[in-house]
Amino acid sequence: MRTFIIFALIAAAAAWPALPNCGTSPVPDAGAPRAIDRIVGGWEVEPHEYPYQTTLMTSTNSLFCGGSIIGTTQVLTAAHCTAGRTPSNTFVGVGAHDRTQNDNYYVRHTVSVINQHPSYNPTTISNDVSVLILTEAIEIVAQRQTVCPPGKTASGNADGYEGDRLIVSGWGTQSEGGSVANVLRAVDVLGYTLAGCRATSYPANWIEDGMNCAGVAAGGKDACQGDSGGPLVFQDGSVFEQVGVVSWGQGCARVGYPGVYADTIYYLGWIADNM
Image (tube, rainbow, N blue to C red; front, side):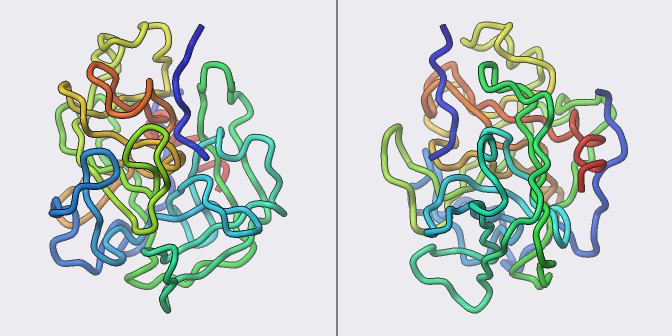
């Protein structure tokens, strides 16, 4: 029986459209490690350092997942975040940093359509992607920006990011069973190939096509509960491109169990078709 934790409270095809200035940040040293220990083995980020990051909230503003801005009316998240939900009880916050002190860049959007992958399997957590269509367009400014699609797509999956420094962000807990954060946090991890992911402590058949892993062999760095649906990105110079969606894991930051993500390269065609 599988006892993993979901992090919540197709060959490569055409990518989603890369909008002007996608993946850019108003913070000059965006992506740099910070001093304060947060997320699991990570840090608190500078305000609007990752301007593509979104919150997913209930009608009472309770955080239940993260997401990423991929178009002016489109947000990418995990299918396990949207399973059983309707547009009327799903809200998206953009331009957020400190969830308790919303600034002039924060806007809460309503959702008109939830495009959940039709083959999402809640038992295996496969095909764990959804695209939310917002009722009104996001006003794109430096502090509310789209993330770029992945660039290394030749393999049809995230194998091209093996060993690369990747960044995952969210307002989730910094330990298993902890409380969610008020301030956005991030941590850097390393990319795995699909074969490398299957060679970890997970049973190989748990890691299906369309999944990828990111973490460190010694453990101690990971996304955790509440980070689900958020972006795993690669920083190419000053531009961030999304290579994964926070999906599931065996606990948080455990040795031998890297975080498991929905592979955005594998799902590029589906994402583009559902924007």
